[in-house]
Image (cartoon, rainbow, N blue to C red; front, side, top):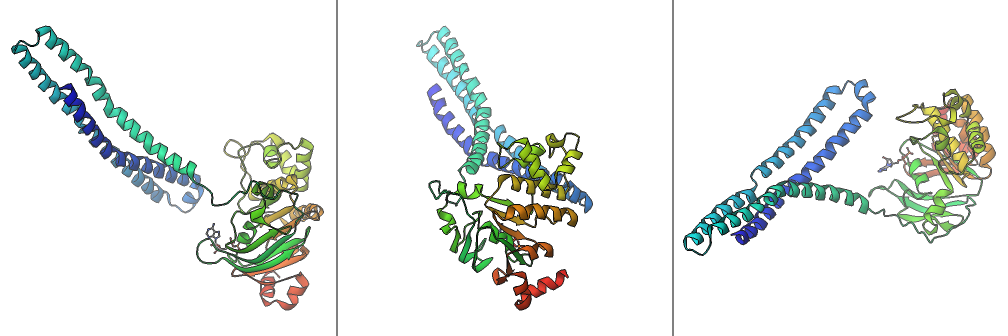
Length: 407
Ligand code: ADP
């Protein structure tokens, strides 16, 4: 009977596990959905309240929580009809009758029957506990699968660790470049060449592909056709680390870590001295507002510390870029939240350092566009024209249109 029991035990546990596993996985998944939704609602609480959408958000959460609860109940139902325990009880009863039968036949003594029943009883605990252990194992496997999925996600980008590694001089060339995030092209037929130390302004309407173009330079994305060359070498042949460590980008969404102000400025250059950090902050016009905080450069940013205004964040990002002394600097609308007087001062500092580096500027500010050596006019993903401010003003209708708006 114990052997027959083991046979049925394996069968029923396998059946239990098969029924439980999809529910466990769905439960884990739903738990993730619920938490992600909650984090989004709480993170965007100002927008939610500003648009009086509290009710909808509560409904969304309730909906998610209800679905999670339903899976939980289903999980419980499967546990409740746990067959191995039933099988155990039946087998125990059969074993008892078998033992009694053998005792009546004189094959077993009464003591043997008692001993046998006692030993059979030992199987009860593992049978009972397997209801929880298999549930836990299932949950564990479901969780591990999700984590492994993330860990095993590979970037399509070839990092080319053995690739070209040198100091970037700053010559940038685009040759017949085409790129699209999906099948539709966002950039097409892009051709231009920039000499080291030049400043290039990229202008064009929102959505014309300005940000996308700069993303091809430090290989956030790779072009699908054509080549992007830095110092005459295809960016794909550069070692990615060498390339990116020498290109600094100030994006539209500035990300600051939950570290101190000083650590955020020195992020790309952890060995920087305090003097260098202060110097960079001064050039980015950030020194004064930093000293305004109670802890100065040691002020924590983020959830545990101060919240910065858009302009303050931009100035910290500019200081960070000044720190790393990149060979190529990409500024994506990076002074849009800064007032003109402060911006003038930052520009003077930028002009001082930008002679040593190639600078790409995406901006709507005429004062910055004028100062550029070359202007690329993007229109629907192609370069409508390129040249200096004076040349374009004379011959390019697309440029005149953009320019007319600013005047
Ligand atoms: P700009 O900087 O000139 O405003 P972008 O380069 O940001 O323009 O965007 C160009 C086009 O590419 C837009 O139509 C935009 O919707 C699309 N796009 C931008 N980023 C992504 C992305 N990460 N995934 C898919 N499409 C994108």
